[in-house]
Amino acid sequence: MSFRALVLTLFPEMFPGPLGQSLAGRALARGDWSLDAIDIRGFATDKHRSVDDTPFGGGPGMVMRPDVVDAAVAEALARGPDLPLIVFTPRGKLLTQKRVRALAEGPGAILLCGRYEGIDERVIAHRRMEELSIGDYVLSGGEPAAMVLLDAAVRLLPGVMGAAESGIEESFASGLLEYPHYTRPAVWQERAVPEVLAGGNHAAIAAWRRAEAERITRDRRPDLWTAYRALAEAAPTA
Ligand code: 9WO
Image 1 (cartoon, protein in one colour):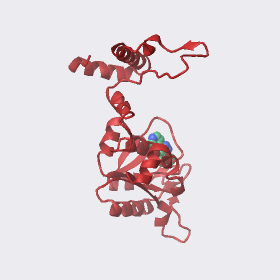
Image 2 (cartoon, rainbow, N blue to C red):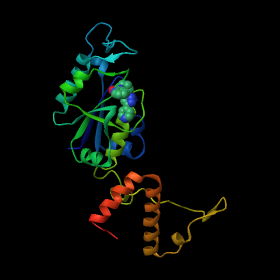
Image 3 (cartoon, protein in one colour):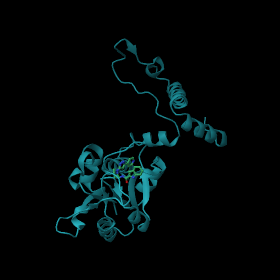
Image 4 (cartoon, rainbow, N blue to C red):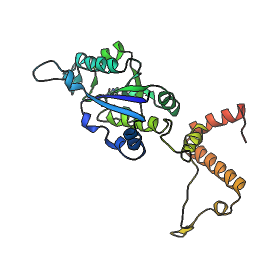
C-alpha cells in the first residue's frame, strides 16, 4: 500500500507539474506514490457546468459552490475512504515538518484546492476538513500549496531518498536551521572555504557545523531558537 494523493482542483492539468520531475517524479514512476487529479468541474450539474456563484452579502468575485465541491469530495472519499481531507487556505494551521511526517507515515491525503474568492464555508464544516496554510501570503489558488505539501511528504516515503540525503530531515528535526555548505573550488571570487572544513578533523567539522547552525538559527529565527533552547534545557545532546 503506497502513499496516495487525490487532488481536487479546477486545473487538473497543473498536476503532476513539478512533482513529475526529479526525486518525486522518479518515485511516482516507480509507484512509491500515486497522484490523481480530480477535476471539480466534472461534478457540475447544470448545462453551463458552473462551479461558482456570487457571494451572499455582496462583495467582489465568486465563491465555489458547496454542492459541486461536496460531490467532488464524495468521489475522492469513495476512492480513498481512509484518507485525511485537507483544504489549503491562508487562515489554516501552519504546515509543519511534524504534520508532513505524520502524513507521510499514513495512507495519503485528499487535497482540496480552492479558486476564486474561496469555498463556501459550509462544505468545509460539513466535511470537517483540516485547513492548512503554507505561509502568510495569498495565492491565486490552493494548487501550489498542495504541491508544496506533496513535495515535502514524498521525499520522506520509504525508499524515495537515499541514505545520504535523508540526514537533512534529521537536521530540521533537531530544531536548527542548516549549516552553510561549500564545494570546490577552495577559493571562489576571493572567498575561501572555512579552513576547518578542509582539515579532515571530523569532530572539529561537526562542532563548527553545529555552532554555525546555532548562530544562523539565533540570528534569523528567534522563534526556532527559543524552542531549541527550551528543548536543549530538558534533554541536552552535546
Ligand atoms: C482565502 C482567504 C483569505 C483570507 C481569509 C480566508 C481565506 N480563504 C481563502 C481561500 O479559501 N482561498 C481559496 C484558495 C480561493 C482563493 C485562492 N486560495 C488560496 C489559498 N489563496 N492562498 C491560499 C493559501 C493556501 C495555503 N497557504 C497559503 C495560502
